[in-house]
Length: 172
Image 1: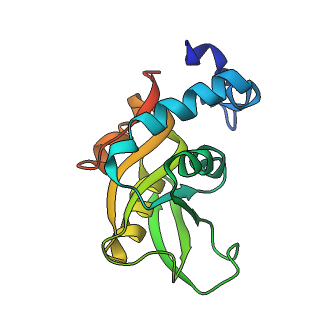
Image 2: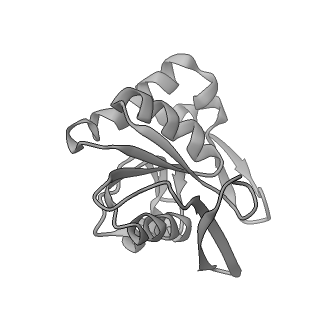
């Protein structure tokens, strides 16, 4: 299935010069979405995964069905103040500024094997911070799952040596 045909490009969003890759048409098409989830699950099924760690917010949509199919739990990583329980946090630098992510303090334990899931891998900063949160518990990142990789932004380079699994790559 040509999944790229389900990606809508929005020029100059959210600001001039950015060609936004909109995944909502893929999510809205039941067959395309099922195909995408199945393809991501196929790359994870032999890795003995206990949890899928999903990055806010579209990562929840991608990661939850993967976890369901793997028989794994879902763990949410969110911006500060969005999770209801005690949290661990990690701040990281962005191209222009900084950001912080949080995870529940009881989310993981040493030895847990996880997949980190999100919709798009761009510069890799958010994925790298999420990996850092996971590893702070002694858990192991067995791989990643993304619908789209914007390969021209070199985000995969930041998160290696962790396996990068992206269904579609865009070089522009």
